[in-house]
Image 1 (cartoon, rainbow, N blue to C red):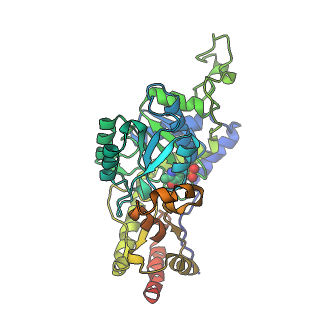
Image 2 (image 1 turned 45 degrees about the vertical axis):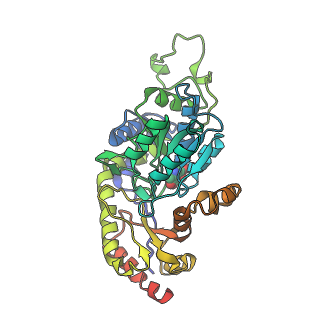
Image 3 (image 1 turned 180 degrees about the vertical axis):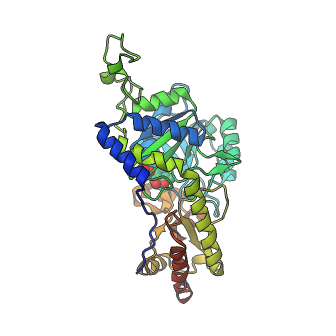
Length: 400
Ligand SMILES: Cc1ncc(COP(=O)(O)O)c(C=O)c1O
């Protein structure tokens, strides 16, 4: 039986050579490859700086920690409220909560899963806006949020905007890449993402101070902020200081450093990013055409050439089919699926303490979180794979 997976990994000659170069260089911890990755990714997104870390979760944590450490942002502090999406991978909320801040959820747009900006406006009008420090929109499945409206509200109420672009490598909003539309943005390069290296993340910003803070905080808060140590060349910026910057810690931080292997795998993929995005868009368009006959049962993904698709999201309409049974049947036919992320305050056990507070307040998020799922649309799918998916969907008619 054919198996059509959510994501695949084909290690090409370029990637093999890059990993081999690392092995031969004798340096595994962060060095020239990480530096090159950071330069390429910030250039690709259109920001001045990029800081590589070991996961997208770490990227969220280091970005938020830098904001907490930066005295320019006094509203970012323990207990501050951050407006974010209830439908996201749980890492977004975990990072906020782990750093002692409070996620505040608004509902989402059903077609693009992006934040409902009217609800943000209402919230800031009715609540005390001084308690709010930031908006953290998630560009879920690659769909950009309405960044003009979000930035307008942020300016009006003195809020930071931090984009979670983990799932939106190269998506465009009004001609600009998401991730370049706010103060800072995180990415994940976990498997099945458009650019995938196993485990790695990054934060981009055009703010030099935040960039420097993140470099320090990701390395246990040490004074050094060079990706590649210049000490042996006698070019350390602290060469005349009476302390060793590697073991002097200005901030309380983490070890979120990545390795040369991860960066080496990412570099050749960044160079192919546009081809990867295009292939995924074509697969989404193809599947949309093939599955259009089920439009009475499913909300198929909204198509746009501005979207860099993470996957192929489907929402079951009006509870027409039981999601679990459908996903099981597709899996039995070799088509891998994943549930769209359950609404965090009402459907995730770790956040059950928020259930009552949000009961019936997030109807779209609740519905998408219980009736949405996704299939792969990755660049390695062949026409036969896509045809196979559409054939597998025939079982749907027997289930309604
Ligand atoms: C929206 C979002 N944010 C954050 C993350 C965390 O990334 P990672 O799994 O690399 O830690 C993910 C992971 O896919 C994600 O989808």
